[in-house]
Image (cartoon, rainbow, N blue to C red; front, side, top):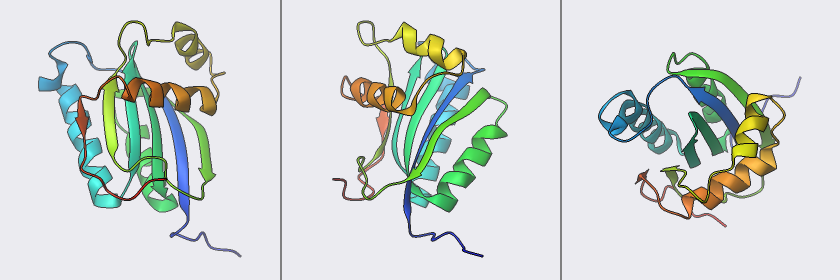
Length: 152
């Protein structure tokens, strides 16, 4: 039986509903705790990517070793601050697109209500979510790790 190559790089795209307040001032509460946990994990395990908070949802694109991403997923699946976790994509990739892990909140004019409906109906595609995460991160981030690797 073949064993997974832990050195192989993977990308995972996730979507989930937040069960906590992510609005103004929420960084001082459970939302800040979620972000701090994600940042610690990213640095410790070499996971890069980005998280976007929009309309009560967490959208994430993550890159790293398969074991690190599976462990990240398991923690998220068992986190009572998250509901309806969906894995939209888990695939091997040749190179990283992100050098850091960052988080941003979607701003008016960048939000995509149709994408949020698709996520709620479990018909969102990983490409649409990935592109949206990239677009929102370009508008400004709340927090970001130092560079963890060299990205393409």
